[in-house]
Length: 337
Image (cartoon, rainbow, N blue to C red):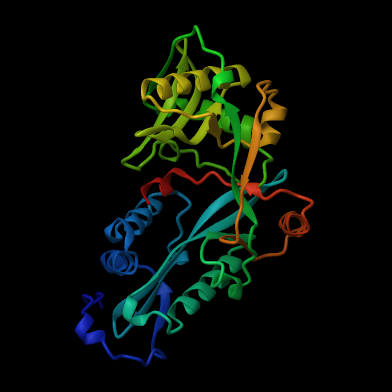
Protein backbone atom coordinates (compact mmCIF):
# COMPACT_ATOMS: atom_id res chain seq x y z
CA UNK A 1 0.00 0.00 0.00
CA UNK A 2 1.45 3.43 -0.88
CA UNK A 3 2.39 5.65 2.00
CA UNK A 4 -0.41 8.07 2.89
CA UNK A 5 0.29 11.82 3.04
CA UNK A 6 1.29 13.16 6.42
CA UNK A 7 -1.61 14.87 8.16
CA UNK A 8 -0.68 16.60 11.45
CA UNK A 9 -4.28 16.72 12.66
CA UNK A 10 -4.64 12.97 12.22
CA UNK A 11 -1.34 12.24 13.98
CA UNK A 12 -1.84 14.57 16.93
CA UNK A 13 -2.39 12.65 20.13
CA UNK A 14 -1.27 9.28 18.82
CA UNK A 15 0.97 7.71 21.48
CA UNK A 16 0.81 3.95 20.83
CA UNK A 17 4.02 3.26 18.93
CA UNK A 18 4.14 -0.50 19.51
CA UNK A 19 2.78 -1.08 16.01
CA UNK A 20 5.54 1.02 14.46
CA UNK A 21 7.36 -0.94 11.73
CA UNK A 22 11.03 -0.42 10.88
CA UNK A 23 11.85 -1.41 7.30
CA UNK A 24 14.01 -0.59 4.29
CA UNK A 25 12.98 2.30 2.09
CA UNK A 26 11.07 1.71 -1.13
CA UNK A 27 10.93 3.85 -4.25
CA UNK A 28 7.37 4.78 -3.34
CA UNK A 29 8.66 6.19 -0.02
CA UNK A 30 10.84 8.91 -1.54
CA UNK A 31 8.35 11.75 -1.19
CA UNK A 32 7.41 10.78 2.36
CA UNK A 33 11.08 10.53 3.36
CA UNK A 34 11.62 14.01 1.93
CA UNK A 35 8.61 15.28 3.89
CA UNK A 36 9.80 13.94 7.25
CA UNK A 37 13.31 15.36 6.77
CA UNK A 38 11.97 18.74 5.64
CA UNK A 39 9.71 18.86 8.72
CA UNK A 40 12.44 17.79 11.17
CA UNK A 41 15.22 20.18 10.07
CA UNK A 42 14.77 23.93 10.26
CA UNK A 43 17.92 25.35 8.61
CA UNK A 44 17.92 25.87 4.82
CA UNK A 45 14.15 25.82 5.15
CA UNK A 46 14.36 22.07 5.72
CA UNK A 47 15.76 21.13 2.31
CA UNK A 48 19.43 20.51 3.13
CA UNK A 49 18.97 16.92 4.26
CA UNK A 50 16.35 16.26 1.57
CA UNK A 51 18.89 17.11 -1.10
CA UNK A 52 21.65 15.20 0.69
CA UNK A 53 19.60 11.99 0.69
CA UNK A 54 18.71 12.34 -2.99
CA UNK A 55 22.36 12.88 -3.92
CA UNK A 56 23.51 9.88 -1.86
CA UNK A 57 20.98 7.66 -3.64
CA UNK A 58 22.94 8.19 -6.86
CA UNK A 59 26.14 6.68 -5.42
CA UNK A 60 27.17 3.18 -6.47
CA UNK A 61 27.66 2.21 -2.82
CA UNK A 62 24.17 3.33 -1.75
CA UNK A 63 22.30 0.50 0.00
CA UNK A 64 18.51 0.84 0.42
CA UNK A 65 18.70 -1.70 3.26
CA UNK A 66 20.57 0.99 5.21
CA UNK A 67 17.99 3.68 4.46
CA UNK A 68 15.35 2.85 7.06
CA UNK A 69 11.90 4.22 7.69
CA UNK A 70 9.62 4.05 10.72
CA UNK A 71 6.06 3.39 9.59
CA UNK A 72 2.94 3.78 11.73
CA UNK A 73 -0.57 3.25 10.41
CA UNK A 74 0.78 3.21 6.82
CA UNK A 75 2.48 6.56 7.36
CA UNK A 76 6.21 7.22 7.53
CA UNK A 77 7.03 9.12 10.70
CA UNK A 78 10.82 8.72 10.82
CA UNK A 79 13.87 8.00 8.68
CA UNK A 80 17.60 7.28 9.10
CA UNK A 81 20.32 6.87 6.50
CA UNK A 82 23.62 4.98 6.83
CA UNK A 83 25.85 5.60 3.81
CA UNK A 84 28.67 3.14 2.99
CA UNK A 85 32.13 4.63 2.71
CA UNK A 86 35.61 3.14 2.40
CA UNK A 87 37.93 4.76 4.94
CA UNK A 88 41.65 4.43 5.57
CA UNK A 89 42.70 3.68 9.13
CA UNK A 90 46.47 3.63 9.07
CA UNK A 91 47.42 1.51 6.08
CA UNK A 92 44.16 -0.47 6.10
CA UNK A 93 41.14 0.39 3.94
CA UNK A 94 38.04 -0.44 5.99
CA UNK A 95 34.34 -0.44 5.20
CA UNK A 96 32.43 2.10 7.27
CA UNK A 97 29.09 3.90 7.27
CA UNK A 98 28.19 7.54 7.84
CA UNK A 99 25.10 8.08 9.95
CA UNK A 100 23.35 11.11 8.43
CA UNK A 101 20.63 12.19 8.55
CA UNK A 102 18.21 10.96 11.20
CA UNK A 103 14.75 12.58 11.19
CA UNK A 104 11.47 12.11 13.07
CA UNK A 105 8.35 14.25 12.77
CA UNK A 106 8.33 16.78 15.62
CA UNK A 107 5.09 15.30 17.02
CA UNK A 108 6.83 11.93 17.44
CA UNK A 109 10.18 13.03 18.78
CA UNK A 110 11.29 11.91 22.26
CA UNK A 111 9.20 8.74 21.96
CA UNK A 112 12.00 6.32 21.05
CA UNK A 113 11.50 6.30 17.26
CA UNK A 114 15.02 7.61 16.60
CA UNK A 115 16.44 5.00 18.96
CA UNK A 116 14.87 2.02 17.20
CA UNK A 117 15.87 3.39 13.78
CA UNK A 118 19.50 3.83 14.82
CA UNK A 119 19.72 0.46 16.59
CA UNK A 120 18.27 -1.36 13.59
CA UNK A 121 20.69 0.48 11.31
CA UNK A 122 23.63 -0.55 13.48
CA UNK A 123 22.42 -4.15 13.46
CA UNK A 124 22.14 -4.25 9.68
CA UNK A 125 25.47 -2.51 9.10
CA UNK A 126 27.19 -4.96 11.45
CA UNK A 127 25.60 -7.94 9.68
CA UNK A 128 26.83 -6.57 6.36
CA UNK A 129 30.39 -6.49 7.69
CA UNK A 130 30.94 -2.77 8.17
CA UNK A 131 33.63 -2.08 10.76
CA UNK A 132 32.47 1.21 12.21
CA UNK A 133 30.02 4.10 11.97
CA UNK A 134 30.89 7.81 11.87
CA UNK A 135 28.78 10.85 12.61
CA UNK A 136 28.76 14.51 13.55
CA UNK A 137 26.12 14.83 16.23
CA UNK A 138 24.95 15.85 19.68
CA UNK A 139 27.45 14.57 22.29
CA UNK A 140 24.65 14.18 24.83
CA UNK A 141 22.63 11.81 22.65
CA UNK A 142 24.79 9.43 20.64
CA UNK A 143 27.09 8.00 23.36
CA UNK A 144 24.10 5.93 24.56
CA UNK A 145 24.51 3.95 21.33
CA UNK A 146 28.20 3.31 21.97
CA UNK A 147 29.64 6.26 20.08
CA UNK A 148 33.01 7.56 21.26
CA UNK A 149 33.66 11.31 21.26
CA UNK A 150 36.59 13.25 19.79
CA UNK A 151 37.48 10.40 17.46
CA UNK A 152 38.17 12.39 14.29
CA UNK A 153 38.93 15.94 13.28
CA UNK A 154 38.72 18.56 10.57
CA UNK A 155 42.37 19.52 10.44
CA UNK A 156 44.44 21.92 8.36
CA UNK A 157 47.97 22.93 7.67
CA UNK A 158 48.33 26.72 7.76
CA UNK A 159 50.59 28.30 5.16
CA UNK A 160 51.56 31.95 5.78
CA UNK A 161 50.07 33.82 2.82
CA UNK A 162 52.87 36.38 2.62
CA UNK A 163 55.44 33.59 2.32
CA UNK A 164 53.75 31.84 -0.61
CA UNK A 165 55.95 32.74 -3.60
CA UNK A 166 54.32 34.26 -6.66
CA UNK A 167 54.30 32.08 -9.75
CA UNK A 168 55.41 32.96 -13.27
CA UNK A 169 53.48 29.99 -14.66
CA UNK A 170 49.99 30.15 -16.12
CA UNK A 171 47.51 28.50 -13.76
CA UNK A 172 43.86 28.10 -14.68
CA UNK A 173 40.75 26.23 -13.61
CA UNK A 174 38.66 24.12 -15.93
CA UNK A 175 35.78 21.69 -15.77
CA UNK A 176 36.56 18.16 -14.60
CA UNK A 177 36.37 15.52 -17.35
CA UNK A 178 35.84 11.77 -17.15
CA UNK A 179 39.33 11.36 -18.63
CA UNK A 180 40.72 13.04 -15.48
CA UNK A 181 39.60 10.25 -13.14
CA UNK A 182 42.76 8.14 -13.28
CA UNK A 183 44.95 11.17 -12.56
CA UNK A 184 42.61 12.41 -9.80
CA UNK A 185 42.69 9.03 -8.07
CA UNK A 186 46.46 8.99 -8.37
CA UNK A 187 46.73 12.45 -6.80
CA UNK A 188 44.34 11.39 -4.05
CA UNK A 189 46.62 8.46 -3.20
CA UNK A 190 49.67 10.74 -3.10
CA UNK A 191 48.13 12.94 -0.39
CA UNK A 192 45.69 10.63 1.42
CA UNK A 193 46.51 6.94 1.20
CA UNK A 194 47.30 5.58 4.65
CA UNK A 195 46.08 8.73 6.44
CA UNK A 196 43.65 8.05 9.28
CA UNK A 197 40.00 8.71 8.38
CA UNK A 198 40.70 9.50 4.71
CA UNK A 199 37.53 8.76 2.69
CA UNK A 200 38.42 6.98 -0.54
CA UNK A 201 36.37 8.48 -3.41
CA UNK A 202 34.37 6.28 -5.75
CA UNK A 203 35.66 5.93 -9.31
CA UNK A 204 33.09 8.34 -10.69
CA UNK A 205 33.17 11.90 -11.97
CA UNK A 206 30.41 12.72 -9.47
CA UNK A 207 32.88 12.09 -6.65
CA UNK A 208 34.71 15.23 -7.77
CA UNK A 209 32.09 17.64 -9.16
CA UNK A 210 30.33 19.37 -6.30
CA UNK A 211 26.50 19.44 -6.20
CA UNK A 212 26.65 22.43 -3.84
CA UNK A 213 25.37 25.65 -5.43
CA UNK A 214 27.96 27.81 -3.67
CA UNK A 215 30.91 25.47 -4.20
CA UNK A 216 33.43 25.46 -7.05
CA UNK A 217 35.22 22.20 -7.89
CA UNK A 218 37.81 22.43 -10.67
CA UNK A 219 40.65 20.66 -12.39
CA UNK A 220 43.79 22.83 -12.22
CA UNK A 221 46.14 23.20 -15.14
CA UNK A 222 49.66 24.62 -14.80
CA UNK A 223 51.11 25.75 -18.15
CA UNK A 224 48.56 23.54 -19.90
CA UNK A 225 49.29 20.40 -17.87
CA UNK A 226 46.66 18.83 -15.60
CA UNK A 227 48.33 19.32 -12.21
CA UNK A 228 45.73 19.41 -9.45
CA UNK A 229 42.23 19.66 -8.05
CA UNK A 230 40.60 22.41 -6.03
CA UNK A 231 37.24 22.62 -4.23
CA UNK A 232 36.34 25.84 -2.45
CA UNK A 233 33.60 28.35 -1.66
CA UNK A 234 32.79 30.51 -4.69
CA UNK A 235 32.32 33.59 -2.52
CA UNK A 236 35.34 32.78 -0.39
CA UNK A 237 38.37 31.36 -2.26
CA UNK A 238 40.13 30.95 1.07
CA UNK A 239 37.52 28.41 2.17
CA UNK A 240 39.27 25.35 0.73
CA UNK A 241 37.34 22.12 1.13
CA UNK A 242 39.76 19.87 -0.73
CA UNK A 243 43.03 20.31 -2.60
CA UNK A 244 45.18 17.82 -4.48
CA UNK A 245 48.30 18.19 -6.57
CA UNK A 246 50.57 16.11 -8.75
CA UNK A 247 53.51 16.92 -6.46
CA UNK A 248 54.68 19.49 -3.92
CA UNK A 249 55.80 21.90 -6.66
CA UNK A 250 52.34 21.81 -8.23
CA UNK A 251 50.81 22.35 -4.80
CA UNK A 252 52.79 25.57 -4.41
CA UNK A 253 51.68 26.74 -7.87
CA UNK A 254 48.05 26.16 -6.88
CA UNK A 255 48.56 27.96 -3.57
CA UNK A 256 50.05 30.92 -5.45
CA UNK A 257 46.96 30.91 -7.67
CA UNK A 258 44.68 30.95 -4.60
CA UNK A 259 46.74 33.79 -3.13
CA UNK A 260 46.17 35.81 -6.30
CA UNK A 261 42.41 35.22 -6.05
CA UNK A 262 42.43 36.44 -2.46
CA UNK A 263 44.26 39.60 -3.53
CA UNK A 264 41.76 40.23 -6.33
CA UNK A 265 38.90 39.76 -3.86
CA UNK A 266 40.58 42.13 -1.39
CA UNK A 267 40.51 39.33 1.18
CA UNK A 268 42.95 39.82 4.02
CA UNK A 269 44.18 36.56 5.44
CA UNK A 270 47.38 35.73 7.27
CA UNK A 271 47.14 32.03 6.51
CA UNK A 272 45.95 29.72 3.79
CA UNK A 273 44.09 26.82 5.41
CA UNK A 274 44.70 23.57 3.53
CA UNK A 275 42.83 20.38 4.54
CA UNK A 276 45.99 18.29 4.25
CA UNK A 277 47.53 16.19 7.00
CA UNK A 278 51.00 17.11 8.31
CA UNK A 279 52.06 13.54 7.53
CA UNK A 280 51.25 14.13 3.86
CA UNK A 281 53.17 17.41 3.84
CA UNK A 282 56.21 15.71 5.32
CA UNK A 283 55.95 12.71 3.03
CA UNK A 284 55.63 14.92 -0.06
CA UNK A 285 58.38 17.27 1.08
CA UNK A 286 56.43 20.50 1.34
CA UNK A 287 59.24 22.88 2.21
CA UNK A 288 57.27 26.03 3.08
CA UNK A 289 56.97 26.49 6.85
CA UNK A 290 53.48 25.68 8.07
CA UNK A 291 51.51 25.38 11.26
CA UNK A 292 49.06 22.63 12.14
CA UNK A 293 45.48 23.10 13.29
CA UNK A 294 43.51 20.12 14.67
CA UNK A 295 39.79 20.76 15.17
CA UNK A 296 38.32 17.91 17.16
CA UNK A 297 35.41 18.00 19.58
CA UNK A 298 32.90 15.82 21.42
CA UNK A 299 30.47 16.00 18.48
CA UNK A 300 32.91 14.13 16.21
CA UNK A 301 32.09 10.52 17.00
CA UNK A 302 32.77 6.94 16.01
CA UNK A 303 31.21 3.61 16.96
CA UNK A 304 32.92 0.25 16.45
CA UNK A 305 30.52 -2.21 14.80
CA UNK A 306 32.78 -5.17 14.05
CA UNK A 307 35.97 -5.60 16.02
CA UNK A 308 39.04 -5.14 13.87
CA UNK A 309 42.56 -4.62 15.14
CA UNK A 310 43.06 -1.52 12.99
CA UNK A 311 39.99 0.38 14.20
CA UNK A 312 40.25 -0.92 17.78
CA UNK A 313 43.90 0.15 18.05
CA UNK A 314 43.05 3.49 16.47
CA UNK A 315 40.31 4.22 19.03
CA UNK A 316 42.43 3.14 21.99
CA UNK A 317 45.39 5.25 20.85
CA UNK A 318 43.27 8.35 20.16
CA UNK A 319 41.63 8.05 23.58
CA UNK A 320 45.03 7.66 25.28
CA UNK A 321 46.51 10.58 23.35
CA UNK A 322 49.10 8.43 21.57
CA UNK A 323 47.51 9.15 18.18
CA UNK A 324 45.98 12.30 16.73
CA UNK A 325 42.34 12.09 15.60
CA UNK A 326 42.21 11.34 11.88
CA UNK A 327 41.37 14.09 9.42
CA UNK A 328 38.03 13.77 7.63
CA UNK A 329 37.47 15.58 4.34
CA UNK A 330 33.76 15.22 3.68
CA UNK A 331 32.67 13.89 0.26
CA UNK A 332 31.19 16.36 -2.22
CA UNK A 333 27.66 15.22 -1.35
CA UNK A 334 27.86 17.11 1.95
CA UNK A 335 28.34 20.39 0.05
CA UNK A 336 24.55 20.57 -0.32
CA UNK A 337 23.90 21.12 3.40
